[in-house]
Image 1 (spheres, rainbow, N blue to C red):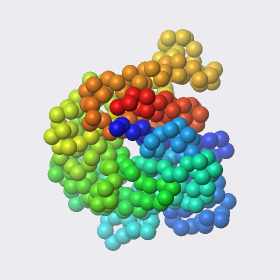
Image 2 (image 1 turned 30 degrees about the vertical axis):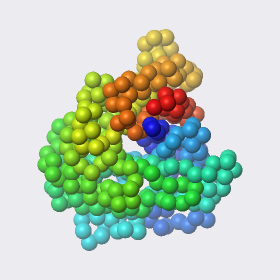
Image 3 (image 1 turned 120 degrees about the vertical axis):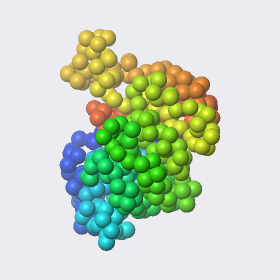
Image 4 (image 1 turned 60 degrees about the horizontal axis):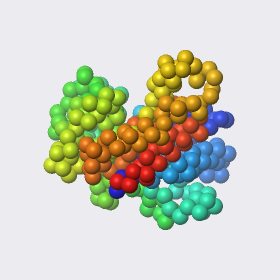
Amino acid sequence: MILSDDIGSFPLPNGISRNEISIIAESIASKEISKESESFIKFSNVVQDAMLKKVFANVDAPTYPQFRDMIASFYNLMAQFQSDEPFVIKDKYAVIPELLVLSDDKFKEKLENFGIECINLRVCITGPVDLYLNKIGFQIDGEILANFAKSVGKFIKNAIIDKNFIKTTVIAIDEPSVGLNSNMIASDDDLINGWNIAIDAAKKNNIDTEIHLHSVNKVDTVLKSYIDVIDADVENLKDRYSLQKEDLIKYDKFIRVGIAKSNVFDIVEDYKRINNIDLWQTKNYAQIFEVETQKVISERLNKAYKIYGERIKYAGPTCGLGSWPTQETASKILQYSSNAVHGAGF
């Protein structure tokens, strides 16, 4: 059975900026503010309300709402609270503040108010390779990469929630640069070792592990790791489907397929080309869905199923939705994706 999901990022509501929410989040992770503080409560409400919107869109495995920079949200804590080993964070600071507020009883009460007993949580964490490339350079040293992976592994360990109202069921590492960065010099063994270290806690807890790529150029390396699910967000359909079903079967892997366009700028540009109307000016964002229709999304899933069949485990938007103009439009594309999955009957 295919499950609907999303990659993570989501538009912020009015009244709070990306900078403000980032400062609050880091203060929470740094143990600088209490649950009773005004900023903590504000942060909690923003995260919990966005998560509810994903749940209301019938997403089977929604990712915690990501409003912050994918590198800074993890690396800042690693740099500030480094252990005796370089780039290895101290255990108690390897926390994702968004998960703290989603595992809180106040969120449980909100779920109960809507008759929701339990949700399956997908957690996305920036992978060790992308952290290394952003902070060290293109020549990857295996031992240093392993240290980055240890930090990622600590975030993953602390992200495993098993409560009666919320359970972590998928852990994804986000590695968009892998296969795209032509300057990267790394051995396959070092990459595989890094990924395996990072996902170790998830594997021990029988949680699905996934990697989010923007290229299939290094997919042969990924296949040799312990990662369960491969997600390749690439624009060219020929490239996207160059990963062979036979290889997934050989290595006992599954695939996540992107069935709804997440690049809203491309969708708006397509609408402008067809209708000579700029939706960024008119702000009539409902017309986005005249291009990215329910039918188009369902057809993409059907095409993918003809290629991969039962090897598809998850499906949703190709990437994050943080650039979408409103939470309402982001919610609608999630709803369309979920409708496609649930209506297909696969």
